[in-house]
Length: 382
Image 1 (cartoon, rainbow, N blue to C red):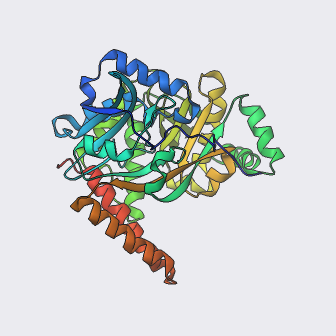
Image 2 (spheres, one colour):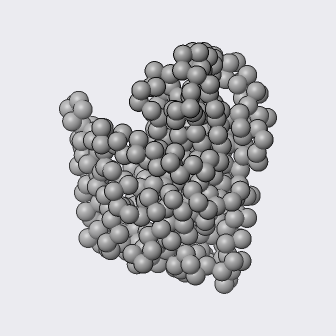
Image 3 (cartoon, rainbow, N blue to C red):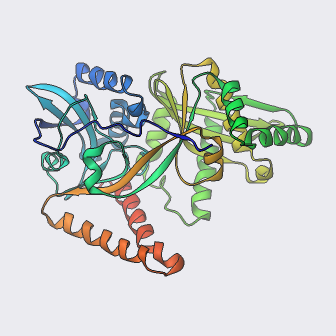
């Protein structure tokens, strides 16, 4: 049984006759009433229930980037002088992108139902030629004309707890959890007692996780997203601070006294988002990272959290664990400008390559675009 699509018919906006004005504020200038309203909008719509879509996320990123984060902005959609919705963005020279890119896994306008929105109004208000998006919620139909592709984010829903979820996976013919139980017994038999820790405060384990992660990025020839100072500053701030409504949570799995796997996830009021994941290479055959996921799902029974969002990526473990999914899109909204022309040309080359029978070479323009976007997001230069 395929994972269910969350709210596939959701349509929050109309692009006809926009009736909103847009005010752009730095995150630090948002009053408490505006922050409370933003959170209330999230609480009222499960599709928007992601810590990446909260006001706390953009404020945390703004703090981590410090005085160099001058482009971090919040576009406030107003009608009749009243705030009706919000979009967080990083504004650079000629273009805007999601706040916290490339560490941000979701982007969306968080707004009241019935708000009419032409995304080009946002672009003009932000003072740029285009707004790039790579993780836009596909249910936001106002962005559909500007979309160049979609991907699936995989989700574990736990409304009735772990045991009910596990029974549902078995009924769907998925044997992944049973295989994990078998590996767990084998790991404990061969390597020693297994200890799971939630909300770990171990600074040593936190640092080990990111040492593993950076080694993994180098080994796979990916951009080291932790090379600039601000991403690790953000991670440490989230690790040391936060509360039940928003923050970073470190989970660890120790075997025979040795750290076997560590996860650092972002949490919201009801959703835990799988984020930074790594494990000890020497124990890879036991799949300690998956065993840690299983322990986290069990742990969630005793918390207000009812969703583990695994994010996008066509990985087998995500497909097997997930019992729900949502679609995200990538593309850009442009107005007549040099930056929009350049982006449109790049997508043209990408589309042409992807339609040609070039084998792996067909994917090269898309990979190059994603790599450049990662580097652009990491740089704090305007």
